[in-house]
Amino acid sequence: MSASFFRQLGAALALMSLACAALATPHVILVQNSGWMEPFYSDPASRFKPLVGALAGAVVQPGDALVLAAFNQSRPGAPSPKALLSMKADGKTVRSRVDAALAGLDTARKPGSAALADTDLGEAVQAAIGTALGGKPGIVWLVTNNRNSPNNDQATAARNREFYELIHRGAAIDKVVAFPLRMPVQGKHYAANGLMVYAFAVGAPGSRALDGLLASGRIASVITERPARLKPLDRDTVRLVPAQVENAPGVAFSQAPGGGLRADVDPDARTPQASIRWNLENTMYPYTIASATLSARSMLAGEDRKIVLASSRVNDLAPGKPLPLGSTMQLPVAQLPDKWSMAAIKSAGSAYVLPGRIELHLADQRLALSQGFRQRMAALFPGDPLPDIFTPPATVQASNAVLPLEVRVHYGMGPLAALGGLAAALLAAGGAAAWAYGRPRVAQLTVEDELRTMRARPGTTQPIYDKAGAQVAMLKTTLFGHQLTDLREGAQVRLGR
Image 1 (tube, one colour):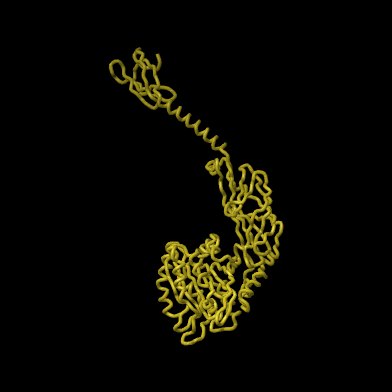
Image 2: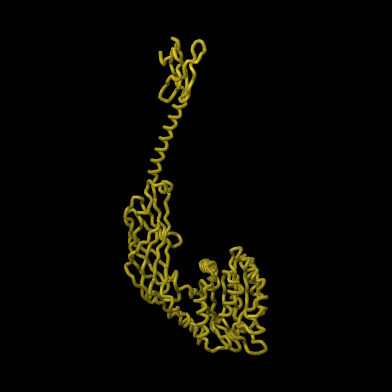
């Protein structure tokens, strides 16, 4: 790579930074134009360029940053990759602008020579991650004929192995899928049967964005081939689908929206457990799980419980093929709130939810590339040793799968109604006490043989005067009656007649 390459991507980097700040997804689309790609450019019937334009139009969303670049192998005076377009997508012109940028692109030649340019797949991907994305999350798309031959190296198997090592050992690369496409073309010098489109998700945000594109069907609207997973091979390798559940008294299991498992529990259940028959599915196309040891656990309310499986081994599980798997699991009843607890009362009439998960672990995992995929790759790329590099790394010997688990405890209205009644009774009693406290009390007393009637509220004290107007005592009133205080010596005052 030369300094001119970095200058070409200056504007692109600014767009990438803007897209990252706006939580959009930066995309880098790398299009190979080395000598081995000659038939894709020279065949009048080639659908190569329209494919790239259609793919860009499908995956790049409004607000996303896009860099389109051609690549072969960098040489002095001929940098690679070479930026063709950088833009912030508006949702309407992506495809047309990519088509226009590709219109004049042809196979590259070595500087000062008639020889066609060589190919370096690893160099192109590393430049896209480190320079175009600037080390930030995003998605790198690589459109190639799968012939990796830097410096016209005929040891393409070794070069492809280096490329595959980049995929699996590149710390920045979180996920990689590949789409082998049939596209027969005939050029002046070469013929080819197919293309490979790779999608490299950089960072966890890039992986989530790629998962979203796969799930939305946007990629499938252009590429109908099933994506082949290259990375990761140690997580989300299988899927558990509940097929049949034998419920215990007080508990009912069902499949929750989004594919998780839901358990509806009665608050009086004391041994909520169930026997569940799952369908275990391999999600790692194009790999077959040749063998693995299974174990499972439930993680809920801080409790880690082992799930008893009917079988602890899996053999020759092909992608998408369901394998029946029985299990018995128990829920942590000690952690369920009592129906008189504040949590239960707050949830009265609805459900108290405990989120958790089921973890399935595959140990001693041995993967094998499916024979059908090998045959397809051999037909698309005859003589190309690349299918061999799809062999899983020896370091990938275990994997994990997680199934969300949601426990919903349904509390009735009884405790809430009882507490409501108690609160109403207390409120009534308090009201009666307040009324009684505030009601004036009548006191009969005799002052110097004169009968007098006085009214006073509890908690008050009033002076008592004789006929001459002198204070002779104090009348103190409480909830329980009246009493005379501060009696003057010789005063003729008494309560009652």
